[in-house]
Image (cartoon, rainbow, N blue to C red; front, side, top):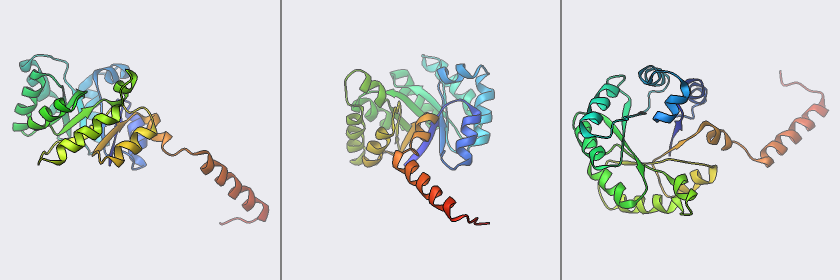
Length: 217
């Protein structure tokens, strides 16, 4: 499973990339707004940090606006994936941009039928939002299961990018279902390291070593 980091904080991306934990990056207008910088500047810097796909989202809602913004974003770097919403206009834009050789991430997916439409539009990635479904009392992972089952029957090029991830358990369940990618906030990526028995075991090993009075070097 590939890990994308979901942030526009370049310092966070650089730190995780140096640790070998980042295969790509996802951003959205809210994350870029938090940076207080111009979107083109932020995306260009992120693309320099990681060679993997970097999702940059359009803000237009009409077809022509999405195409204009998408083409502008795609010119920033070769690894930009233009992010469009799962609407009729968004899927039309997806098809056109894909025909032009641009990666496209179709976002805000909440049903299997939406994911099927995105695959037919040749989306590079489909982003089902599991955490937001959990928030309204549904099991977001059921959506991932449904999409993976549907895609397994066909020769779709679209990769399932699990989004709105809230905790490490989401990652384990998504990986067990065979999802291709998960996009994670930096805090969730770092939470994957944590276990109290790891900390306890390390503490005991170090205490025993200290008693020997030795030094490795």
